Picture 1 (cartoon, rainbow, N blue to C red):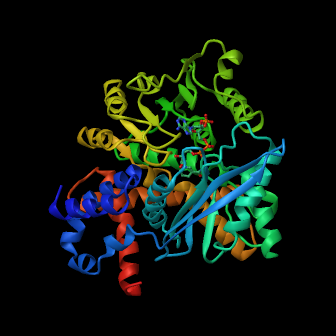
Picture 2: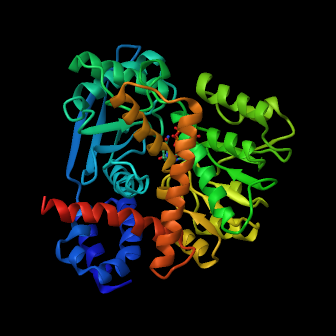
Length: 453
Ligand code: NDP
């Protein structure tokens, strides 16, 4: 680690205590950028990186709501408006009990680089709450979303900040949030993305992150003249990203062996086909059930419960060619990363944000496998959110085929930026450097143009 990164990180840790995920995300980017800052003293003297790591604004608020029994609850709401150099703040909302300031700051920070890579004019933001939608009735979720939006509505707008979904925030929640925004502001605008198709949503938005992560994997394989046809794949999670990752792998001829939720995972040696995927989608999106129920329907599959005392996640310990982590941050620890390599995995495309710990990333990069970090591989979601914003502004909707073609093109372009940038800065095949540097330069140049703000 260079003296510059050491001193930057000492400052970040002192100023942002108890935010380990934020430290982790900043350190990875800073290490990649060392060589760029050396080549471009103008970035260093304008303190561009020092400004990028400081959110432009952090909003923290109380969310009181009443459950079906009449009991009052209080949750905490956040919106991190990280960087608006190249467009309005853009990034998802996460509802999960683990949500805190540090996790949202890491996500908002990553979002700045990701959005820049998409080629679309979007700044970076992220938000959410420690509210847990699991086990809540639809009415409770609605009352919570209305209370959340009552405060958030003052801070967002179609030209200011445009939130979307993330963990725990899908179509149902976006609907309730949009309804309340419209009621308070008396305007029908594209203030959120991931909207329903009848009221301003874009076709392919639900599919976009998962499809994009698979397109990215296909591009990486293409550099070795290979395709996904016949490849065996491990997928974690069973939510939005995991479901559409599975669908696109099937489209491209791959075989999916696993899916999971926070309670455990299923291993289906016969492969998860379209009928089984439909069962999972109904189970998760309509019945809001647990992945364990998969083996009741398909008894040849095996369910393994999550053991918090185990040093590794057995999901990542099966023979396969590709891994698509699609659940949450730091879900692949160093031992898992080694297990993946030992089991022959040589393609990792991250649907989730920062799912691999730094030691794991180092292993993947050292072994020169095809490793696509989240800020590049999962950028398809926000890219189609950007396309949703364009369609809202035009008051016009593109067809499924048109949006999918644009998504595919954007993923190819992100891949090319990462690949070429890694090469240009002397680390060929290193998509981590490629994504960090490629995402940084556009934002940094815009910041230089706009002066010290
Ligand atoms: P969902 O809420 O739809 O699904 C999340 C899945 O991950 C669920 O199966 C959930 O299980 C599991 N999960 C969540 N937290 C944990 C945990 N702590 N340990 C183990 N499993 C967990 O979310 P998404 O699919 O939208 O998001 C998944 C990942 O993809 C996140 O990292 C998100 O930031 C990232 N992402 C999402 C985008 C999008 O467009 N939705 C865009 C870019 C990135 P359970 O049901 O038990 O909680």
